[in-house]
Length: 84
Length: 373
Ligand SMILES: Cc1cc2nc3c(=O)[nH]c(=O)nc-3n(C[C@H](O)[C@H](O)[C@H](O)COP(=O)(O)OP(=O)(O)OC[C@H]3O[C@@H](n4cnc5c(N)ncnc54)[C@H](O)[C@@H]3O)c2cc1C
Image (cartoon, rainbow over all chains, first blue to last red):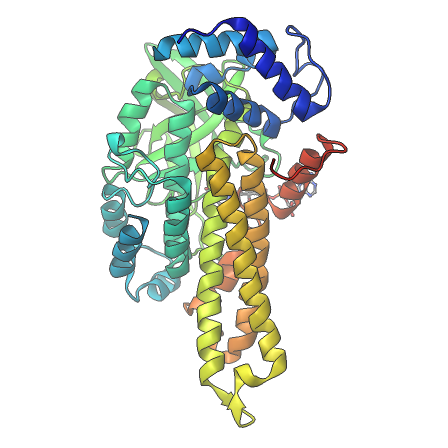
């Protein structure tokens, strides 16, 4: 199965909206605006893993991969690609 | 599977936990044996020589060990946390290499805390720097590292390339000094020690992930396992206290009836029982989150650790009261529980730090104090 960026980004945005009660543009830096605690960063990791059936470990945990919706989308697509 | 392993540990421990507590020492060969059987980090997958338990089954195993011996359970927490950190922060190659070592009898300890960084781990001053010729250099001090006295591998957290990560330092590397905490007040045989790391050179491929990662994420990832383990260990403390209290108050008579027949005694038994039940439910909930891949797992682990450690400290205090002079000597299961339980309110985030994390969690969800959908 191939995954395209649009549905992944929408899914991530929906999760962020549900958890933070605000909407997030695809390129807004979540960490810069102080919207993210260490607990929430971990929540994001586990959410992406279970929703997209991927494992995010080691160097993939780099902050840049979680900074924006676009960053997380690219990470998900890359890891899904690698799974196949 | 979890029951089999618990039975095996019970068989090996026998009635020796009291003696280990008084001596402040666990038999190293027993630790190596349990390590090689995969018991000490039972969530490691079978592909890496582990038992492949899920969080719930490993939790029950941890509680069973904790019921017997808080020191052995502490060693198990360290080994499991090291394994989990390697799994989460390491590369595929590092997982294959190091996890197999952790299920082959080598023992591990995990160092976050420093003289200037207890609750405030962002103040960590240990550094891991690229040293050229395929090495890194580790410099710093760690304090209160559980199991460091026994460990072959020290998992040391520190700053790296603008972020943070952990590095696997073999304990016999030149420049490493392990200085035992002389007389810990609880979990006395768990081998707590300070580490002095003086220009310690290790191969660069011992740096987990090989890049600088966000410190909060690194710490939360590792501590989430540690919190689950401590929480289930506290369930074990409560079960040990409950069993001892029920037995003692059912057998000993004062004022012509068994102690348990006195209503004020009954109240403490009830509170002890409820503490055990609540702690168990909080742990089951957190393990279900872990096993189900629920995003809330980190918060649920904080909650479980918070609930279970407080229940254990209160429950152990009740048990001491109920056994009175019968438990007033070191080595006794209830005396150990009393000393060990209080320390469980300190490690892996103190009670106050847990409160701050939980408060932050609800605030982040203003107006949506949610149950699980
Ligand atoms: C038995 C035992 C085993 C341990 N094992 C390990 C191990 O394996 N690896 C490791 O790295 N470390 C280990 N530790 C260290 C442990 O993690 C620290 O002791 C713990 O994080 C608390 O740090 P501290 O002792 O420096 O207390 P401090 O941080 O100095 O805290 C002192 C008191 O102030 C409170 N406090 C601090 N900050 C705040 C705040 N912002 N708001 C409100 N209250 C606050 C605390 O809750 C506490 O009550 C162990 C400790 C013990 C006792």
